[in-house]
Structures are given as structure tokens and as C-alpha cells.
Image 1 (tube, rainbow, N blue to C red):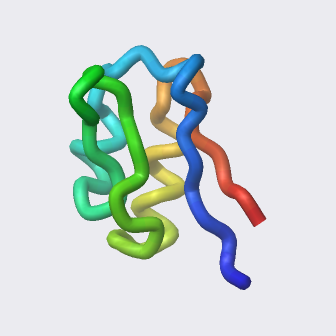
Image 2 (cartoon, rainbow, N blue to C red):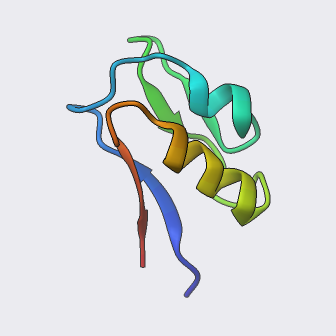
Image 3 (cartoon, helix red, strand yellow):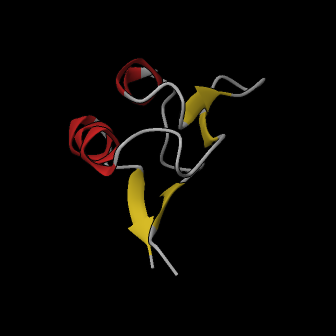
Length: 63
């Protein structure tokens, strides 16, 4: 099984950077926190950029 991005809802501050970088994978929910909407929505390189750019390190890969 391929790895999937996951968002730690307790760490997320809702800055929206992940959704700007990989908008087919991440979106802000009704609480203005990031969530995964499609784990394969963007190329892994774009998802990794969103992970690397998260200011609070709330996104990671799950095997």
C-alpha cells in the first residue's frame, strides 16, 4: 500500500499553505483546519512540498 498524507488536527493552525500548494489533496474544513480530501490528488513531490512548508509540522506521511 502506498503512503498517504495525514494532518494532525491538534497541531494544525489553519494557515492554508498546504491547500495553496497541493489543493487537490488538502483543503480547509469548516473549522478552518487542514484536512486530506484526496490522498492521491497531487503528485508526491507537491504533497512533500506542502509537508515541508507547514509551519507547525502538522502534516506527515503514513505508511
